[in-house]
Length: 189
View 1 (cartoon, helix red, strand yellow):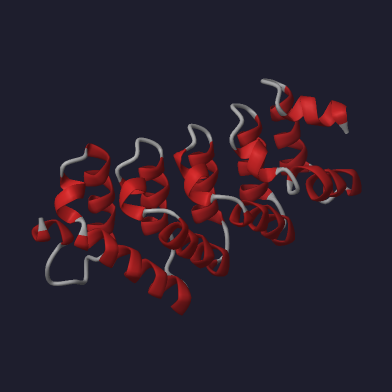
View 2: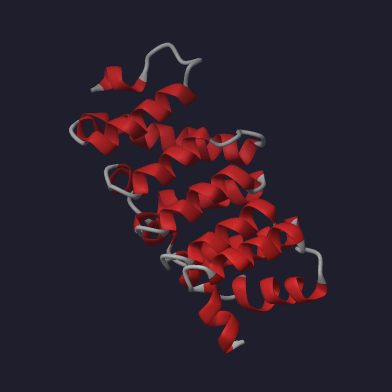
């Protein structure tokens, strides 16, 4: 275990784990590794320079059960702080791109309620996670409601967001999401 823990955080070792997940994800040893180590320590690994690649690999190529395990570990942590992390925001973006609607909806809800979405939208790293949430598939009523609430929050803060280059990027993503509305969000600014 200690050897695996060191290898997953190593510059080249993380690549070995990614290939294992991609090509031998159903092998019993790989399943044990994902369930016992990676999913359990997903939050810590997500903040690491090299280990975050392994977590994103599970989210992209892992089985639905393994994705759920990793997402649960991430949602039990502070998702807003993870989104602000230099490496963690990549994991949050991958979660919005590859996980199911229920998990994405829970993540948007957590970002809206446990963190200030406006501050996240203006943050150098977290804005990408907010943008990924806005660009994710709206394939369920819960996800649609959460994204509508997030968009409403962003629209209310449009004057503040326009002042930040990262906020402008989030507003652009929100406008793209709301192409069916009559008045773009930026017009509120």
